[in-house]
Amino acid sequence: MKLSVIIPAYNEIDTIGRILPLVAKALPGVEKELVIVDDCSHDGTREWLWDNLGEADGRYAGVAIDTDGRAELQPLPSEAEAGIAFRVLFHEHNQGKGAALRTGLAAATGEAIVIQDADLEYDPDDWRYMWPLIAERGIADVVFGSRFFGRSHRSLQFHHFFANRLISFIFSLLYNQTLSDVEVCYKMFTREVLESLQLAADDFGFEIQFSAQVARARHWRIYETAITYYGRDYHEGKKINWKDGLKALWYLLKYRF
Image (cartoon, rainbow, N blue to C red; front, side, top):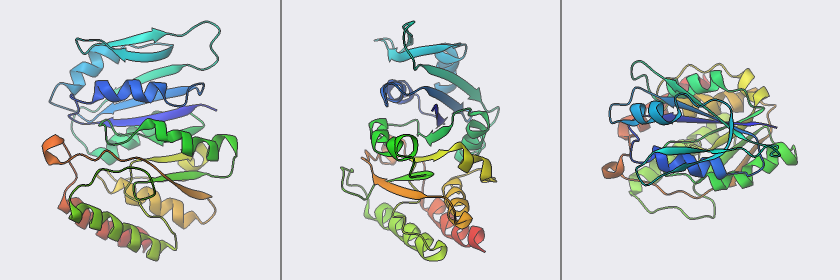
């Protein structure tokens, strides 16, 4: 089973080169396809992706970043069964995270898909708790990560914590689910789930729309597992704000009724 990793990126020049090696080495032995979508960055992310990965062709063992910040694709041994393919897509104008995700999902070819932010808030090593539920045990169709279960997470502003818990509580109430973290980045799911979705959100409303359509289908097996969260604040590049929280509350009602 091949895993497609969808990585939306907008102004992540300080982190894009650091997250890709972590993504590449996660789930060793699993065939992976990294679909990176630049949403018209203007801080150098776009140029870095084009210069380093824009013409990547074939399968590789991984990627390393040298001391000058350049990507070095590592050759795949001839006897290797699993490799990594890189696909880089570019938006001509900024459209929003949801639009970048939809572009990436449309290009994905894997039998399973996972969403990965281009910053360093999430650790791809946590996929080892999600992947077996879908690919090995075959008991889940969708696996949500949760920043509020058991593993480490950075202590940040209370209103972010409260807003996430409130949105998840209202979601669970409206959609008769028990999800603790619907706004989480980490969502891993099968191609069958992807093909059932009709996603249209361009902004952070993607998280609610995705979760709402999965929940309303009433036949997907939904699991949740603890993940680590290395949250960042606005000085470190965090983009979501209180306006997105208000929109999320509206989307909860919109996609339910």
